[in-house]
Length: 507
Image: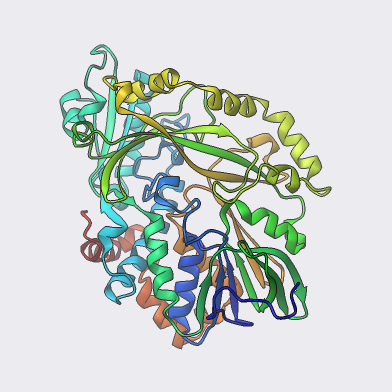
């Protein structure tokens, strides 16, 4: 280590209150919330890439779905013996995404973010199934969801003409004898989580006592008295130096697990990670794209794990309209798409998680075979999957593109359930001085809810002291209100409409 290290960014905050590791969607929202709650707080962020939100948060590296349970069948398990469908998870995710929407509308109203159309756009959300058994399930799902005020506007149909009006590509050249059904929610969204993260970091770094330093990798994390001491390496020059903070948040996507292991906190013992690569089929043929204005989620594929539900999405990326279909999974040992190493997975194997990983491997051989098979698929096989959605799809209109990498957190309890599942894990030390986010969907959509939980544990004064709690209520009006309860339906509708108006969305 150099005696007088060259600090890449001259504005770097020395010994701040908070260090954020990773400049993705979670760090952007946690940092912004903290700074808005308490302008006196000092925050330093370190990011290994050249600019914020270029790994999993980037628009090309995730589905961009504003996850709210509108179309994702995996959030509503198959029917119970009495014919009902469990909707608890869908309600939970809907309410949590509402908190994110509320903070975004506050950010626009207060001038933190200028143009909401740069990061969020209205796109209807559709669930589409085929086969009589799946049609019956979707009808039961709709019946249960539509009874709740979150989903009152959801429409169900088995009428092909209606489905064609919603999304003509789904019906064109489809076998007329095949039973089909769909639900439609006009108020869905397409979100560019990379753009909103970069916009929030642009605001944050203009605030006194805040800075982001890019091309900086954390190579050591040590508890030093009441503070954490981090060793930082500048990726281009190799210069190294240290910085300390009272609180550290690890929001490094797939890179979070190795950093937790570096920190050595007891709560991280036994944790493992399983990386899964992703790929999209992408179309920019305007004649095709213009005929599909929806995000369409389908039914689980018989050969795929539960979370690998395909969807055909209208996306707005890099200033133009696209269709993305997938995701197709792929085998990888890297934890990060851009800045990962093929040695990430083997390096994460430790004595404390070895037994768990062996148990997981033995009970999930089908998943490993599936990932290898996915990686070996040729374009012909991928187009066959696409044609289950869009029977008239032409190979020449589509190309394959790599997406991000998700690292599924593996716990000792995951052996029987399988390692690929929805959900996020927030790991926090006993003294609440360090937290890390692990997991995947619907992480980005519920980032504000996750950030609030981190703040509640590590900065409880912001919830208990009136000077802070009133500001929190201004940013997220539904905090503590439980808007999923029927008696709060009117409050939900009022808040939801206000946010939709500010963000340029539809109800």
